[in-house]
Image (cartoon, rainbow, N blue to C red; front, top):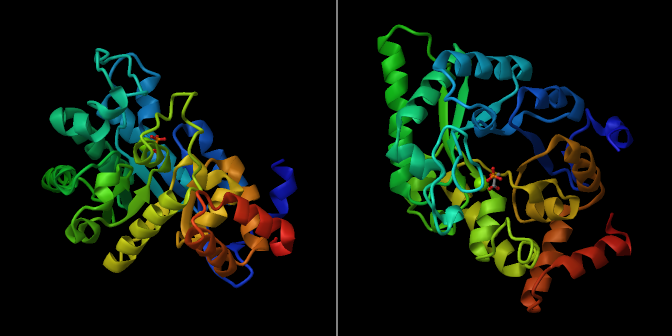
Length: 325
Ligand code: PEP
Ligand code: MG
């Protein structure tokens, strides 16, 4: 299937009207990095750092992490890489942490909550990232930010490590950009100041959808029950995109839905200009974007919403079948 889209690799994901969508890839292991060149991705929109922790029995040392993150940046050859700080707890169990007996782990002590309550690992991770950047730009983002204050605290923690590294005479990154994942509905309603302070925002659709519909992403009985193209959910994402635009903050979408071509064009139609997905999805998503007019699709989506449709899927499929693509 990859070969089928090979001819598209160096072409932009531009729709018929000339709107360009930037396609990035998600990664988490060194083994993923060769796909960066092969897929034609603009960079790594989400580097899940916890994967390194999940495969070890002990907490990795700072020097090991710095070497690893440095190799990731080397492999990216100047393309941007967004490093997400540790997202553990819930479904992601690390061997060196006592499993928490929580009634509802997805809503429990996880990700940034854990990172802020036990900041040692996050500090070490920040130091490793700063050293790995070694004069190159650094982009860091936090998982599972639920309220503004958590973002402020986490950001301060990273900036304090930058100051510490400066005092120690280490080379600092060329610039440090600090962003948040928006994956809890509460953050969509955070004060304007949050949207202004964040250097960038990435919508984590896997978690956002689970919490929006109150449907566990791990539970086979319910995980496919609600359509991503549900009008309520698209309206919600539309609001998030508008709030980011008002603040002048770049916004992307990095959940699995970004890699599904029909979902991807709908996300682009409601205003997302950057999507991050598994490398194998880049070809198929680019292929479909290049065949449609996103402005026209936006009208199809809005009309389905006005008619009171539950999901825009039927309308979008009919539009595609009628020769729109
Ligand atoms: C998400 O929640 O959409 C996301 C990208 O993060 P993860 O799947 O690692 O929770
Ligand atoms: Mg998530």
